[in-house]
Length: 285
Image (tube, rainbow, N blue to C red; front, side):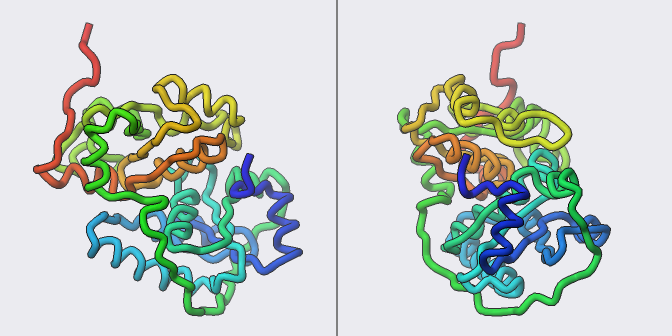
């Protein structure tokens, strides 16, 4: 599919050829129970709630440039990020990929299939915690090449050329829950006006170790909501994790103009001035 996605054999080859920093995004408890040898744990990749205000983006940059610097990323190493499995971590590894890409890091990959693929290969795991060589992270300004804020989304509500794609779980899409953290975690339930919906799971093949579908299958899913390879797409979920999973899938399938609203529903729903659609997205029978 894409060099962004590495198989286990490709990861092993990479670590033999060039400097590599492997990042485990799972919980500290899961990491402590066993992880890929040499991997460092940065669970904040998943838990951090971002906003798209200038202050929010500055805080995000400061937070993760420090975290990735402590992990030993200087710009020379390839960062390889993994989670438990592609469908169990709500987009943890792909959120890490998006964060590093947004910060301008030049070499980022995702272990396709995650920790479960490593176990499937019968490779060793460890409980030893490596001593990372803390360094200064090479922060670069990437602008809005990948991430957009609520102002861009608000402008897109009236742009029929842009598809706003909601990839949240079904209960969030129909407005019976506001988040994966609880039905009433956010003050409002619903969706962006005019948004279309493909649940993020649909871009992966089910199985013991789920992997992304083939590009033609991903494009077939996209066509069900009017997305072609050249359609401008703005993705959102609750906090940019599941949407990051979808961003990687769409880009790997050749959808060229995809951007992510990283603040997503957690930010949008908390501003009462921003419009939403509430209630069922269809007429009840």
